[in-house]
Image 1 (tube, rainbow, N blue to C red):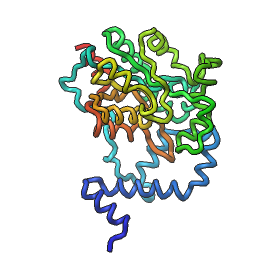
Image 2 (spheres, rainbow, N blue to C red):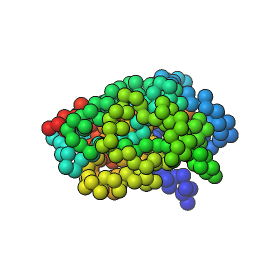
Image 3 (cartoon, rainbow, N blue to C red):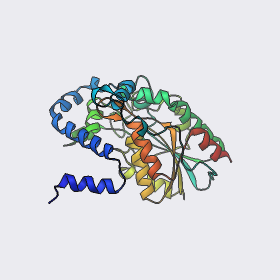
Image 4 (cartoon, rainbow, N blue to C red):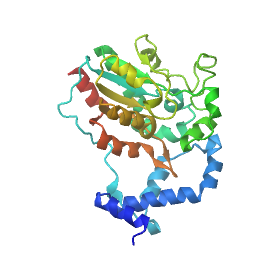
Amino acid sequence: MFSYPVVVTVLLTTLLIPSNVIASDHHVVQNHVLQDTEADASISRPRSLKGSSSSSKSSSSKGKGGSSANTGSKPDDSATVGATGLSFDTSDTALLVIDPQNDFLSPDGVTWGIVGDSVTEHNTVNNLLTLFQTAKAEGYVVAVSPHWYFPTDLEWEFEGTVEKVMHDIKMFQRMGPLNLDGFEGSGADWLPVLKPYIEDGKTIIMNPHKVYGPETNDTVLQLRKRKIDRVILAGMSANLCVESHMRELVEQGFDVTVVSDGTAGAITPDLGDGYMSALINFRFIANAVVTTEEAVAAMTS
């Protein structure tokens, strides 16, 4: 009789998932469980939010004995999907930007130690600025799904890995839903270069999502009420809030185009490269995955 792990492995292999990926995922999960106590200790300290793209890449590209292994499996982060012939119309398309806030996008933000390399590499801030400018100039609906935590949110009885980190380091923290004391210039505030386009009185600012996806806010309602069927998606961070918004919007019947260099992700030696993880899923799930240049071309065609 086959044991449960064997059955799972056979099923996954049948679905054409490389065996090296299965082995790697099993090792990560097993390692996480075995080191649960150490992980809790490190997560509880704000300064544990440190990462290095070079160290992550180095560890992921080495096999036993330090030899290079599986280097051909890393996807090309410049490749796009569905860009040929793509065009958008202001009548049914909106630009939706997730979490364009200081804690993610500013060097002074509390997560810069793990997202900064990715933000810089993909020129994310300038690309977001270009998307905002183009959408405003062309007359597209522009919406923002922000991430804010209030004191009552810190009373949750349980949290996921990154939720705990965010609460411990007071990420996106505000004094209250009706209280803007200390908001100006804080980590919860908009990145200054993007603020004029967000606070122009026309951009739709959703209620805050609380974990990652739009299920807990009014994103879908606001888009549907404007008869928006297509979404150009960008913002932070790639494998968390952006990917979660993409998944839910697809499930809700929207045509979703993700701007691959309009986002970025955390890179840590222990958890891996969040951006590359998201990019794979973007390509599998979204209707199109394009660069900012390709998105602008489609918005202005």
